[in-house]
Every structure is written in structure tokens, then in C-alpha cells.
Image 1 (spheres, rainbow, N blue to C red):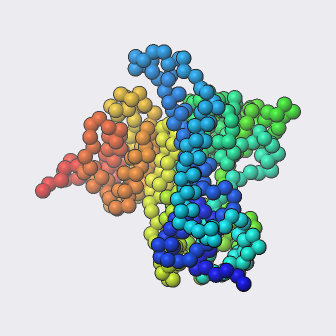
Image 2 (image 1 turned 60 degrees about the vertical axis):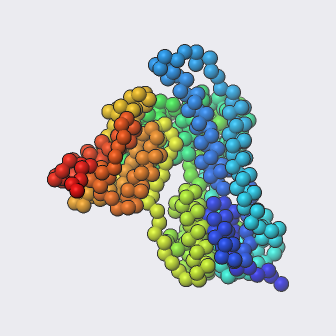
Image 3 (image 1 turned 90 degrees about the vertical axis):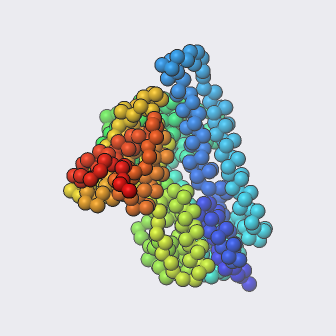
Length: 467
């Protein structure tokens, strides 16, 4: 006889475990099924180990700037590659271990199953030969690196973010194929640690930047730490000595290792989505409602990276919670999603907030721009590579979005996300006090420029409101 539970959760990452906690608080009976390594993509192979590497790279890179500050002797610093990678793994293991411990603390031995789940019907899954019936299924199986056949043929010369941090040492040379957020972060960090890095992307821009002005500047700035080639496909070839030659148009380079950061694909192989009785697209994916996470009218929910919509940790946690709340309530409730926010922890940091530049009508959009070169704090820090572009509706002055490439842009991006979430206008944003000297004064300059370009004439100086 099949075991019966209220909810079967497939996948123990950010979305699945957030849903688990929500369901357990509501006293729902659950089973959590996980195939492969435990821990979130973020903590295990994504944002956290990469940030540990970036932090080390930043410290080492700054040795070259010390002379201008009157500091001497930094030329004696060197990189201990094995120690660098060991620290990255230690931090990763601590974070992953904590996540796993917290997860299992809430489960008994019958509620967690290590195995590959297959959906047999909208109310039944099978794992390790056991059938489990349920009132609802929550799919949170995550994603895996995309590896076209020419890259798989590279053997042990090929790295992905799933394998990079297991390397015992830094490579002497590295080709980064795919300059999205993670490719830019890893490529620049490796370059700053003394690795010869060549970055390639088929797109004409890096980090997926939609604003052409910021995209051009960001490519120039990151190009100081690695060679960047965009707008061309690459052909990798394994050489007899184990190295890899990358052919990109007329450019050819030979490197020790290749990092494939082309993107990630949903983990749906063998999941049994075809047994749900709904149409699947050419990629085997079902349609679902992004505001409820429900697949059609079925008691089945599609959450986290597996749905390939918003592959970010905070979004995955939201989706797990939304799906769980709908399961608990037994009714379909749509939840408004958060303001889009993305950050690349490069130097300078690249951030996008709200509406993308490519989605806006230039006829009705005011754009404001400011450069870090005009900011006093940036001059003191000797970090002059940076700019902010802000977008607002010309008529209402409502803040719509922004693209940043600037030091500490992560903090300004959060401020802007809150302003957009609250429906603030440019003049309302300028009522915020901007202390001196801070990097945020560049944000103030961009807001002022946006106001000037809107054609609006305020009755009083921006930031001053009569009482």
C-alpha cells in the first residue's frame, strides 16, 4: 500500500526547503525528496563560493593601488593558489552544512528521502521503488549547467560552476565561455589573482546589460582584468597535450582550462512531467502561473530555478512560500512579485533594478546619468570607474528602473528597488538626505539629471518641500 502525505516536495534547495518550513508550520504532513548533493545552488556552487573567491581577488588586486596612498612593500605579496581554493571550500562547506543541518532538524527519518523522484500522476510520485500518494506536489528540482557536445568532449579540461570550486589550485590560464553574471564574476576574479583569462560571449554585451551606455563602459572596465571577446560563437578543441584551443572568429587562444558558464537548464530529466496530462513545450516544460506557481488547474506547483523564470535565491524562496501558502489555503491566490533586482559582484558592481532599458519607450522616458568621476568619495577611494543611469516616466516622474556599474552599487540598487516598490517619483526620491561625502551622491546626481531631462520645472528646488 502506498504511503499517503499531504505534500510531496521534490528538491531540497531554497524553494523546496522554504516551502517545507511553511507547510510544517501549518501542520501538513510532508515528504522531502532530494536527488544529488544537498544544499542550495547558491551556497554550494553559486553565489557564496564565488563571493569568497572575489573577496580574495579584491584584496590581492588592491596591492597594485597602494603606492598612490603612500604604502610601500606590497610588491612582495603573492598568491597561494591551493590556500585560496581551500578557503573558498571551507566557507562553502560551512554554509552548506548549516543549511543541511537546519533542514534535517525539522524532519524525521521517514520524511526525507534521498533518491530521484518520478511523477506518476498529479497525486502520486515514485522514489526508490516506493509509491507515495499526496494531495499536492511541489517541484523544486533546480537547474544544472548547459554543456553543448563540443564542451563535453573537453574532458577534465572543462570546468563548470559545479566543479570549479573543487579544483585544488588556480589554473595558469582560463577561457570563460559565457559572460553572464557568474562568468564575469569568476573571470575578473581569476584575472585579478594572476590567471590569464580570456572571456567570450555570443551576445554583443556582457552580464546581460540592456542599457548600451552602461554595457559599453562595463566591458571596458572589466576588460582591464581579462581579455573580452563578444558577439561571436566559439569552437573549443582539445589538444594532444591536454590544453584547449578556443577559436572565436579570427581570434584563437590556447588555455589550460575552460569554464563553461553558458547558462543553466531546468532539472526535469526523468521527472515524469509528461504524466501530468498537460501540454509540454519543445523543451519539455509545462505552462504555469508565475503569480501562483500552479501548473494549470492541477495541485502541482513549479518553483525555483526549475521554472527558469527568476533564478535568484530571494525569488526562489518567495516562490516556495507562495506555492506552500496556496497549498495550505486550498484556493488559488496570486501574489505580486517583487521589483526585479539583479547584482553582479564585479568591480565595479553591475546592478539592474526595475524595468529594463530595452523595455522602455524612449519617447515617454526620461533618462538621467551620472559618473563616479565627479564624486568626491570616489576620488578619495581612487575608484573612478562607475556610472548610474536612471529611467523615469516623463509625464508622472515615476521612477521606473535603473542600470548601475559602480563601486558599492549593491546598496544603491536596494535603495532604488525600495523606491520603485513604493511608487516614488524622481522629485520624491530627491527629498532623501544625501550625506557628504558618500558614493550615493552619484545617485543624487543621476536623479537630478533625470529630472532635468524630463522637462518638468518644480516650483521649489529639488529636495526642498514647503511646510
